[in-house]
Length: 413
Ligand code: GDP
Ligand code: MN
Image 1 (tube, rainbow, N blue to C red):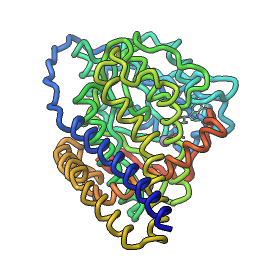
Image 2: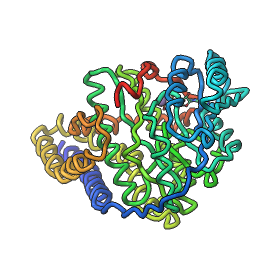
Image 3: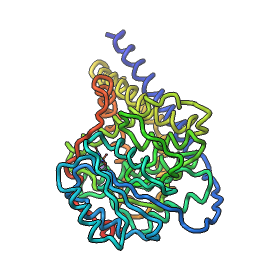
Image 4: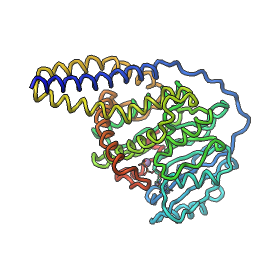
C-alpha cells in the first residue's frame, strides 16, 4: 500500500510541478516583454481590399452579414466583397445573388460557387487564387463588426514588416453562467494573444476577422482544418509579423447550451492540436524568430503537453485521495501554493490589458472563473488529443447549434 502511495505521490508531484513551472516561466516571458514601439509610416491612399466570406448553409444569417458589410466605411472603388459558397443546400446563394443585384451601386459583391463542399480551407484557397487586391480580409458569416474595422485593420500595414492583422473576438450570448465563463475565459485568451503579439506574433490571427498582405499568402494544404494557424505560419515563415488589433472587435454568438458549447471547444481544440503537431518543425526554429522559440512552443505546451500532464496529475491525485487522504490534502495545498505566481501574473496581465480591450460585455467576465474554465478545457483537450490520434481531424464540420442567433454589431457597440 505504502509503495502504491509513494508511486502515486511521485507521479502527482512530477506532473503537477512540471506543469506549474512551465506555465510560470512561459507566462512570465510572454507578459514580461515590453510592448514593441510602433513606427507608423503614414501611407498615402488606401490599399485595395478584398473581403472574403466563406459560406456553407448560412441562409439564416447571411442577410445580416451583408447588411453589416454594407456599412463598412471604406472607399467603394477600393473594396470588393467575395462570397465563396461551397455548394450550400439552402437559400444562401439566392440570398447573396439577390442582395448583389439590389445593392449593385453600393457594393461590389461577387459570388463564387464551388460545385462540392470540400471545407472552409478549400474555399479560402479559391479566394487566394482569385484575389488581385493588395489586402485580403477573411471574415466568417456569423460575425459582425463596426464599420471602421476595415480601415483600422488596414492601417497596421503602414509598418512594412507587418504581414497580417487580427481582430479581437467579443463573445455574445444570453446572460447565463456559461456565458459568464466564456467572457472570463476570453479575457485570458485575449491577454495571451496580445502578449504573444508584443513578443513577436500571436499564435494565430482569428479567422473570423483578419487581414493579410495578399502577396504573402499560399494555398492551404489539402486536409487543412486550422486555416487561421496555417495562414499565420505561412506569413511568419516569410519573415513578416502579425498584429493583434485590440481596437478592432468583432462579435460572435457563442453557444449557450453546455452540449453544443463543449462540441465547439472540442472541435476548435482538436484543430489547433492538429495544426501544432503537423507543424512541429516550427518548434524552436530560429527562422520564425521569437514566434518559433517562444510563442509556438508555449502553445504546443498548452494544447498538447499540458493536457497530458494535468490529466495524469488529476488521476494520480484522485488515487491518492482514496489511498491516503491526508497526503492528498497536502498535495493539493502544495500545488495551489506553487500556482500562486501564475495566478498573479494572469490576474495582473488581464487587468493591464483591460483598458485596451474594447469595452463591451468582455470586461465583465471574471478571470478566476475563466481560469476554472481553462482547467476544464484542459481535460477536454486530452479527450480531443485521443480522438485525433485514433480518428484524425474532420475537414467538413457541422454548424454548432445556437451560434446562428441574429445579433447586430450596433446593438452591442
Ligand atoms: P466555428 O466558428 O469554428 O464554429 O465555424 P463556423 O461553423 O462558424 O464556420 C466559420 C465560417 O466558415 C462560416 O462562415 C461558415 O459558413 C464557413 N464554412 C464552414 N464550412 C465551410 C465549407 O465547407 N465551405 C465554405 N465555403 N465555407 C464554410
Ligand atoms: Mn463561427
